[in-house]
Image 1: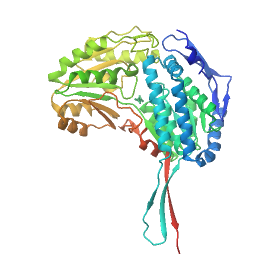
Image 2: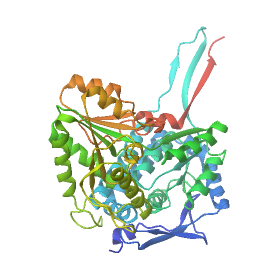
Image 3: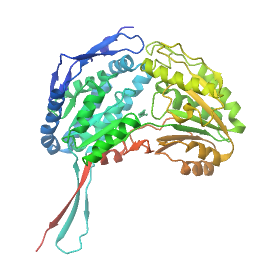
Image 4: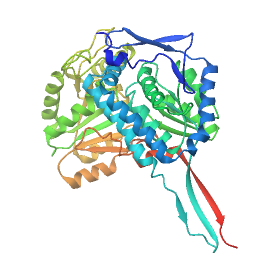
Length: 483
Ligand code: SIN
């Protein structure tokens, strides 16, 4: 299928630096994962161009921070309104470069716009404090100051929402940004830069650079002018970013991998658990940090839950995300399919039982839902983030074992718990080593709540009023007001 005309109208194939569209002789192709067709060729920027983007963000910072919070809020609200106006084209663009089904892409547009709307509201509520001083005649004021120009490095799995969750708070408090989208999905970010340009956002406030992730990301992270780096992606890359930022005492926020437990207690409403499992597992074909990775099901309901989930999974339609009724699109690339294949083969070789699904051919773009039971702790599928539509089920006895299994991972992003008894749910929830918990809920992501993890899953929070904190420094002013 070719690119939808509304999406085509949003395609920008140059970078956006200092308020202008910047071409480059070196380019790389952005392809549609469902068809391998080339959607556009965008710049593989050289170091000098990236440096110009950093310089533009640096130069624009004083004037942007000096604007009133109401002005900055209006810019965010304007961008969100434009996103909603162009929702069909944007959704089609997301589906074209990422592969997710159109309905999910439309959901992502609304989710992404909601971050800009939320932070437009928060921009005018960045409060300071006054603190009683120990001496008469002194006044202590605590202000929140923007950290400065920021590097925003975003992944391919939610190309709109992962950008706006960073861009919203950054612009709200007065930071300027250089955005570096993933190579697989730069077109959504460039389209949003186009909206900012049309709205008259001052040159340099938002810059978008595209190209080789390691090289350009490394340049941004290594630049002392970037006073903060916000990164969503793998734990390995996040740790290397954190090392560079630590050596140069600069701020960093990391939203890294998860290995989410999905706990089904023996008193759970299985209809609700099933509905939660379908969204927690199959949203974006399982390519999400908050995807349920390890299903931990108490033995009395294990068989019934497995059978029901296997039947529901087998009924999901796999195909091109633009086709009606499809709920699982292609994985982002063939490397992703090969990884999922390796995990499934490893589990089967170690004794897992295949309940439903088939392994794809070696060069496949798609992988249909697979349900595995009798998972053990030695299997790679238990230890690693699957990032694909594979359900791995392990039966357990009692709440203590469910908790121990849920915490048996370095990751600590999110957990899901299904059950009826409120006291039991609270006890289990309290013991889970994660930053977020869905209780009888399979989707926790929302602009009003702090998104983020503990342990190896990252540092800092995005969304909610806490999402502003990482973009501001406290500045305390001691003032003598009488003498
Ligand atoms: C992610 O996968 O990194 C985030 C998904 C979400 O916001 O729900």
